[in-house]
Length: 389
Image (tube, rainbow, N blue to C red; front, side, top):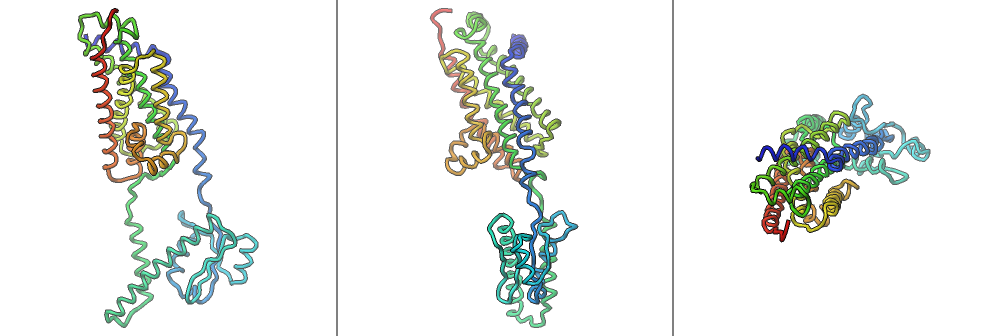
């Protein structure tokens, strides 16, 4: 009887055009619109090479740290080039700045190093920050030299020390491990929230499975209630059919976004699947709770699920990338209870971090969320009685 009920519940779901649209078609349509809207945003926001000048005086020539650092940052053959550098005299640098041909220029003096700009902006800020960072590292190296002198090492080859320090920094850069995805993208939050929405839309399928066993919601429910068959087996079969149908829709969405839209979710495939399974269970549990706990018609229940899902996705960043960060910063408890945010944060942690603590925290939170809602639904269904059928 269980397999019979599972089979026909599964077939019934795929005959419902509204369910097919919300769980299969709508996420794919939305994914397409997201790609059309966001595909060129980050390309437009990429920094151009910044035009600067450096006053080539004796102080700059003798400063090996600044020389080496800006040589690397201005290397036109490097993919990491940040500056387009012109080495000039002071008068020429002033003229270039006045004419707007450079964002600023660097003037090295005996006692200080100055960054001269005419206006404030992103390029000017970057030049100032980079210069400050180099000077800070220079002071650290000079402190090392000073300590060596205090320790009684008087025959010091300063050039050799600076060369070794620079070599050490370069080698350290090579040893840095890239623990995050190679294609870091803040717009991924939008696609994470889309997956979360697809998971939570499974609530509509869960609602449908519960309506089919309630006498006050469908004719099939009336037959179920008067039949001698175990109600728990019927509910389990219908719920399992809804869950599998939801997973099929989610798999189609993943295939479409990965192979058609070329979205990179990272390399942790098994963990992505686990999070999707748990997220779908959470979505299904919402539908079961609404179906069993709300005394209203099917359309109203569907509206409740859709409204709740979209509100959760809004808080998780679907309608605005910064919304998730605003909630996390100001009212973090909301996103701790928001299933869409749990799913988004789980994907986010896989994409950006090398540890799995945050990921498993979200997975466990989703399991607890789903279990609580299912237990409440079971209690509600057991209390249902009908005066007449």
